[in-house]
Image 1 (cartoon, rainbow, N blue to C red):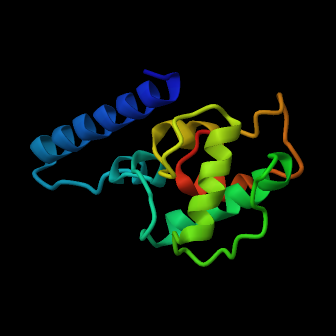
Image 2: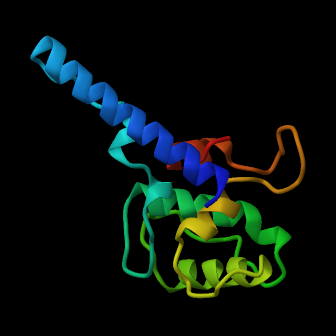
Length: 137
């Protein structure tokens, strides 16, 4: 289990405990923090998927693309997980030595969520899309 996965699980458990306490003490349950609602990084995405999380994946792949041999860097950021997006995911997974399945799951998110180029802000990395996806950066 990665540190990021463990932190996510701890945050979710804390949010659940907070809701339980709020509901039993005040009689009125409060809304869960945004973290507990589930973020892009908590799910898998594959061909046929759509939405803002897929758009974030496309943005992240576009940033990594020029740095990966055979990578795709001109994906249309339309939130539709089509064949071009799948091809970019496959190139990304191949480059990083992951299981190549064209699915953006935990292992792929782990690499997408970090610029992998050392400490400090990296000029080409789309931090906004990463944060919107739930990346802990």
